[in-house]
Length: 486
Image 1 (tube, rainbow, N blue to C red):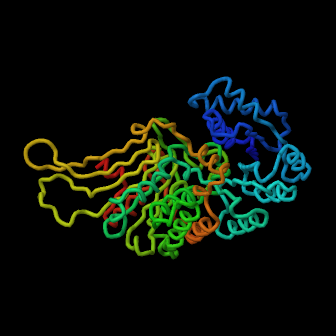
Image 2 (tube, one colour):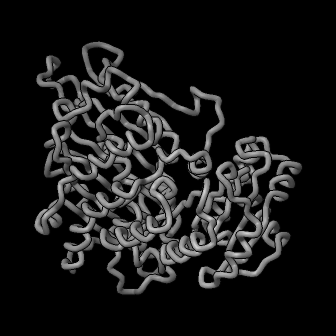
Image 3 (cartoon, helix red, strand yellow):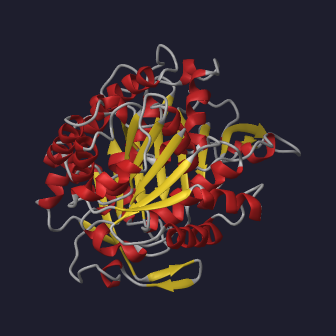
């Protein structure tokens, strides 16, 4: 029997992501037949009142789940219960305990979809009431800390009540199908391994762009910013998978051992290097998809004089044998020209061309791994254009996962929730990974705090500040869309 307890069960993350993910897994037969779902929040609700909210979330965000029927929705709602929980009231946890069956065979998953300030009080009460004994696990959402010291304090507190293998630090990007395919791409194809190093790779670009602004998260986002919200977790996790050495096997800790080595090898910036190798920006008014949008400083909950960054570009380097001298260009931003997430491996140019100047523009081979909006892998090669003479052009060998597989596409939250229920830690962040990521981020944050002039502005609907293009151009490189536009 598996019991899923969702703290923050009436919140936005619950209704948009977690409840739809659970419902999809239920509809497709991925949950135990005696599965039990308990929503927990401070609001006083009956089971029936909570079920109405769950049904609304399903209607709004999971109405297109394959195989869904009225009967299955009713069956899912029958598994759903509610428990009023206030982290400051121990008696609430005693009532929760009465509705759980904890044992070595019965798995209980506590999902903390709450603010990080609530993590420790909740876990403390769970421990005091004997709810983290046996086969119990706790999932914690990001952000986990604001810097290296606060993350260390949170992790030390968590481990005073839990074993490390009970803690599931979730990063929903790791649940994306294409992120997992990175492991297969790298370690199940022999032709790539000889090329996957500084001898053959010119640079690596990892870019996550969003068209949305901060929406209703203005107050939260203004105390976080793009560096903490996206770079410290999503982007650095992708860096670690792209750059990691082959693990000894596919066991969770073997994979995470290699990832943390990459994070520890990231070159830590001096204050002078921060000014030369990072760009931060904030969006101003513009248009996205032809619709006018307001500036960041005019968003609800954002102070008019805010200096919080909504865009980051970084030229990172990895100080190890495989990657020495290969720049990793990282970029993320809100209110960008399009929504996309891509990893581009740019290979070094051929040493000499036999075709002369008439061959056409000659860009080096590149491997483009798209995570969103569609998942694909494209290997760009040179081929002769039809007609007289020899003129070369780019031709893509395209692997479109939607076309090659009829299997059901599993969303990232659904996959991660199922992994947590099954006790698979592979796609969750370990304590030392988190510490290594913050250790690299801290010097950047510190230098920015002492630089009042470094924040650039960019028009909403663009690709960010022009300084981000110059960051690459001074080394003879360019972002992927700049090559397309040229």
